[in-house]
Amino acid sequence: MAAHVPGQYISVKVFLPEMNLYQARQYSISSTPAQEYYRISVKAEKGIDLDTNGLISNHFHDIIKEGDIVDITAPAGDFKLPEDLAAPIVLISGGVGLTPMISMLQNLVEQKFSYPITWLHGCRNRSVHAFKDQLDQIVTTNESVEQHVFYDAPTELDKQAGILEGFLDINKIESLPQYPGLSIMFVVQLHLYVSNIRI
Image (cartoon, rainbow, N blue to C red; front, side, top):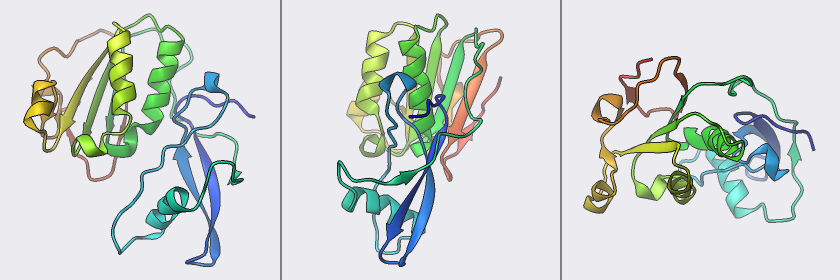
């Protein structure tokens, strides 16, 4: 199996009976190289008026089972952290745009990255907050990792847990660290507004 660099993606080709043709889509790898497999994290789409992307996503959830064989490519893509990174880093994501970031974050932790890591994420609410439990565990067990999360509609329980309300806005984060030479990587899901990102 070809090794991947956190942040890269693979292409997956599946046959869609509804369209009677093969379709390929690209998915970020959300596992780390140390795990020796490719994990992709595909969101199920709801609604009756699904486009091709929604059909493919649901095909994975409804049709593809453990042990099935699918066609994939080798990892590709240039969205990745510098190999010689030696500075604090801020990872910023919105919605499902966090999938390459979770690979980056987990890999940094596994490699015992010696600089502070700040994770900023925005999504609609807890029900669509992917990897929430995994991220909470990473933050709890690693003093060098700090996270700030924004929900469009947080509950009172969310607010008590430190979830911020509204669009991701760094001006609302009182404890956001300022480091010289800070490296910032970000992926934003379409239609999610991230405001006031300054380096």
